[in-house]
Length: 144
Length: 144
Image (cartoon, rainbow over all chains, first blue to last red; front, side):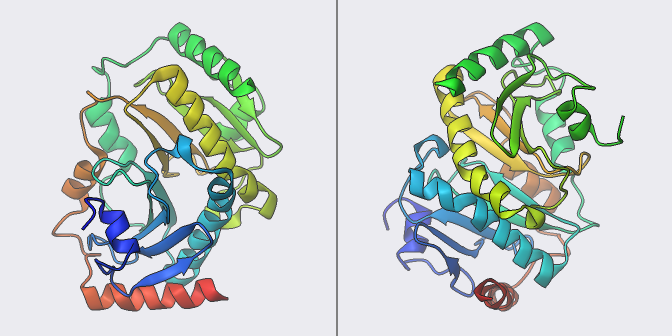
């Protein structure tokens, strides 16, 4: 074991249910080890990279078309109401996107859960002026 | 108003704090209208499209490099512990990615919140065999 669950799955030391589902030159797709919801997929780069900012040009180029294709396959095979895509990196720091079939009856609206956790009393809550200042700093950075 | 908040922001009928931060041919980036966390950005296609499966080839091609660039700018300007990326579509069905500076002290680990909502007693919970069968069906669909 390497200490990275994603690397262990990629190397075959841990097997996801059903094995590798799809791969591109730089990314791999398999079923989540979590069994909360059948069809919950994990999309991750083959290289151990921990921050989205550090994706290579080639890795970044493949991401959008892959998310699109995986979402389309999920829509056709599982017919969820929609498809959730989440990259959090809380426990496994190797970048991965959870691609989750969101069925109509699924409880626990994610944004409402976040609102409960992060809502009104968040120390990071900002005023319009603070948000605009942050927007300006990010605009400048993205212009570079 | 069009009935789509994202389209209203794109058309300038509603202004995000600080205005448009960045745009590509097919996508636009601005600050969230939610003020729970300063620097929370929304990345959305300029076209009204409701499912990731329906992104055009051109839209999909720009997504990965844009997520990479926005994450990198956020890392440099705001120095979060990491960057969350979430596409949910619960209330605004026009596709959008929440790109959120996840600070070290932020409470409410998203996966733990989901576990509470979707955990052990989920009717969608699956066995290894069911997960493997779903994996096989998705593999076949992605091969096409």
